[in-house]
Length: 111
Image (cartoon, rainbow, N blue to C red; front, side):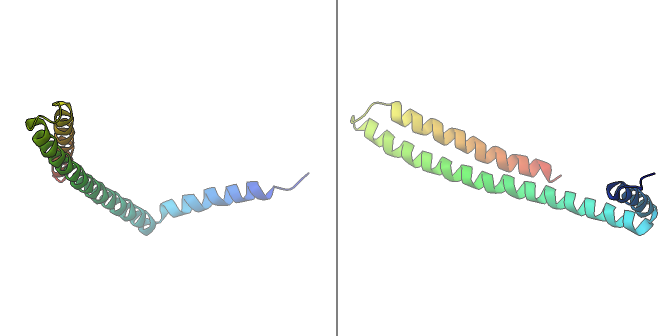
């Protein structure tokens, strides 16, 4: 009759250890505290991500607004058609919306 393999012994040991650890109150409390802490930090990091993305989007909107102004001046002078000015304005408006909505989402999630 062959003996029990090492892998099987480790599996049995793991199950017994897990059962014993589940019965110890301070281990369960520590696990619960760690889970809540990591969830909280994840929430804060998500808010930080939304705000940083909002800043970048607003920066792109500003760059698009400056490009619109430059192209608008050229259009008014009769050097170019309105297409580039419309494109720059559309770019600026889209990224302005992305920036504002990113901050709005971050503000909504703080409550």
